Image (tube, helix red, strand yellow):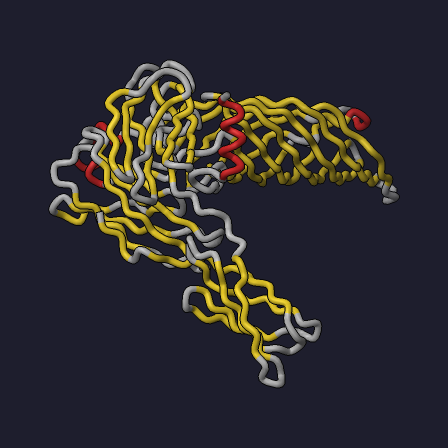
Length: 445
């Protein structure tokens, strides 16, 4: 595997590096990065594949491991990249002094304000801990001193394991180190088989009937990853299938269904939480209007539960009176999902809640009256969710009964069509922070 360049700055827009993998005879290749994103891989010919790596737009100076492996043989290769971050270095000196900061031979300058404060922005690479600061006052007098850089220790050890596995089905798990140390793998309960260890890479076979924690240790570094048990194997986060898998094995391109309720294949897994918004129209016979909804869902297998908070406006007539209303509603929602195609699932939903409305009624005499109204809400819907990017497009057709109890139980809702989007993938830093390591270590004891 070749990655170029090996040093990138976390900037906006972020720079990119090219990744080239050469794997003659490999049956099932995957490509992974410990942070940032990989583009979809393409076949270059002669058993070579290419992809583009994009680092995070910001963060602390860190190392990133890009790894590729053959799921059949377990052979793996790694390349370590260094990511620089723009760091702010505070300096206290004479008012108006010219400040020069040198970090490993790189220059950054600023001028102190009237209070003698200066904040210098400098690019800092992982492993750099000291900056040399020179302040020159208006008379030309210069003072030089070293300043310790307040940067977090860069993670250098990472565990790569499937997010979910089938009970008893063996899968490969890996540990990758940014250095030359040998990472050692273990699990919280039971034992691994087929263990292989060499500088920078450890691998083993995992077969489990219950949730386990995969642990990697290298020197003073420790990293953990939880593996759930479900109906299908879901690939490790930030890993992609190289083009050869889908091109050479049509059966492998049939994406397994994870507990998202949507076929995932080589896509990064989604979070179990969904949060988004939708808009739609409503017609209930006497009233017609629009609704804007904030949606939250928690997936439980092929089901989802959550809440809808909506704002609504409607107009129409009740008897001889012209009516307009504005209000809010809150419903508890349950959904049952059925995957029907890669990235697509159909669902049936039921909801129960209540609503409040401020109703303005104008009789034929022309004198408007306003009052409070509302009541319970009972609804049902059929729709589909389609995975697009880091979430799901949601389209639903349904009916809701929301009677205005003080207005003859006229329905403030009715039949309607809504369209929305729910985000369901959240960025997180690979390898976990050292504080997260300590929390998990405490739970595992």
